[in-house]
Every structure is written in structure tokens, then in C-alpha cells.
Length: 265
Image (cartoon, rainbow, N blue to C red; front, top):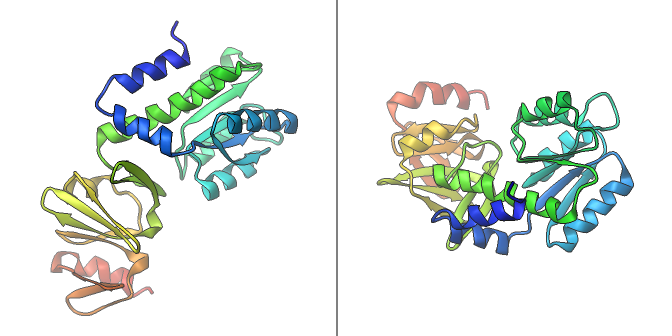
């Protein structure tokens, strides 16, 4: 059976994504949320991660803490103990988190009975480590989960299914952008241009295909060439929407649905 390190080496060398993923690991500290009800164990894990160049964005002891902190902190990886203080265990907690967000999850548990394993598999975990675990296996599992997740994202397109945040390419690296910071998305031939207040990003996907991936209700298509973030609209007239310095035309086909929203403001 291959080790996590061997699998990671295979992933890194098996496709043209090698350069992008290597840059990600080099330029980004992998952000980990630790969900562990034993404070001593949580502290030990935190020290291991920090020693290996990772960023611990928070520690949660209960299901509610895990849900709230994952939404607020947007980690790259969830490190989830299956047994938690309170009524909900780690598996139920992941189910709740996945109602609004998705983060690759690695389960930690001292209980490896078949019932718990099958329940955990239902959430499609990135890895499943039994306590006590080897420190190197933990680090390799996190790296592998990170690489595999973003490998699948990049192979599918330059932008994942939109939820609360996306990674957008800027030069040689990918930057994490919160959806609420995106003002509008414009067609640019067979490409798209994603515009925030500070930066614009070019994506190698056309607007028609991109619009099929956007499930977030903040975004509304107002024209065959324009998608806008409704929260950024500062005004409108009979033909245009205004967002900061941008003047965006809207077509008759979208006018009725758009007005239903705007009249509620």
C-alpha cells in the first residue's frame, strides 16, 4: 500500500498542473481548522502543523463552534475529530457544514469500528487517520487533501462551483477571493473577466458555461455579456445598472426579473 507521501509525489508529477500546485504549496500556508474536544490533543496538533509551515486558523471543541468558525474563517482543510463534546459528533457536524460550505475534511478518531467508518465515508472525506497517528502521516494527509482538492478544481475549469469563495489566477499564483467582493463578471470573447474593487481576473471559460456554475443567489445575469453582484448595485436607469464606475447595460429579456429584485431594495 502506498504512503501519503508517495501518493502526493504521484499527484504532483502526474499532470500539467504540477507547476501551479507546487506554487500553491510554496506561496500559501495551508489554513487548517482543528476540531478536537481534547485541549491537550488540539494543542499538540497545532504545534505539529505550525512546525510544518501550516496555519492554524482556529480550534473548535464543539459542533456549533466548528460550524461557526468554518464559515467565518474559511479554512483550506478541516481536521475533524469524530468524537466531540455535545450531542453532535464530527460526522454530523461535517454534514451541517456542507449545507452551506465545502472544505476537504480529514477525520481523526480512536474508534475505527465499521459503523463509524461507513458514516464517515458518506461525507467523502479526504483521509481517515486513526489515533494515535504518525506526525508525518498527518502532514502528508493534509498536503494530499489540499493538492487533490485544488487539482480537481483546476482540471475542471479555472473556477470551481461558486459557494462563498473561489481561487482566481493572478499571474503565477491563485488568490482566494470572497464572492461578496466580486462586483461583476463580463464576457470577453471566449474568456470572462471577473472584476472586484481592487483587481480584475481573466478566466479561460466563456460566460455561458460560467453562468451554469454559479449557484450563488447574489449573482444575476442582466445581459448576454454581463453578470452582476446584486449587492453592489448603486443605481439604475431604463437601460443601465451602475456599480461604482461601471455602467452595465441590461437587456429586455432580464428586465422583469431584475426589477422584481430592485424594487425590494
